[in-house]
Length: 308
Image 1 (cartoon, rainbow, N blue to C red):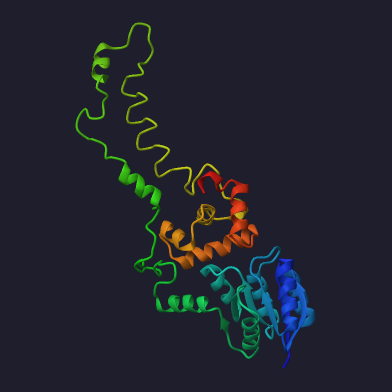
Image 2: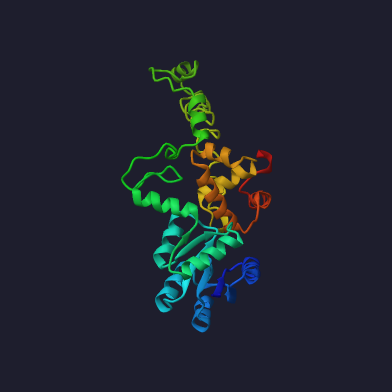
């Protein structure tokens, strides 16, 4: 039995590539392609395909809403999500909307064909990573990120809140302030206070609020402290193109030449989580590989070439 398939993706190169690929497979007929959810709905109404290969992030109407509408209005048409995004929110939203399949864009032709055939027969076909996360959610066990299920205890890979290697290094290198009475006062400060200001002079630069006192630029609130310009809350402000602070941080570490394993160790997260962040940021800034990502980071000021 030939499967009639509709391809929906906002990126022309991906859309055209899928149309070409499916056209070469036996028992597959591509009945059309669309660049957003609204166009997909119109084509489903006219062509009544057996299966829709659906992207998630698209203009005008995203893949989740389009899936919900298709399943409500055309229940004989099944939906297989084919996307870059594998975070829990995207996965569960698509499945709740009625998708019977969920694959990543790393899937090969055989996997896509198998998913199409499987959902046509009334079964479900999910990416192995998605299956694992669903199982973890149902059983209440810890997933890839080391995060705990609701109300649970964080797993061994869970990241300490607001902690990074910059803050821990600063804590080791910065001596604890001496709390003894009079400690931290410059040797000549007492004499300066007893002598008082010289006639006609303004506030003394050697007084308690001096440039060398506890509030100086070399004190605990220094430019090398935890609130540094290299952290996610840098002076660069909100990251561009919808990147989250964590995705921007991962991108900065990529630009510094760190591997996925090194990024995971630096941010106290698992490699699987690093890969998810990389997939998400690649899709948002429309780059294909790490070299293009580094160029983007330099161009937008998210990374400094001198830090590489």
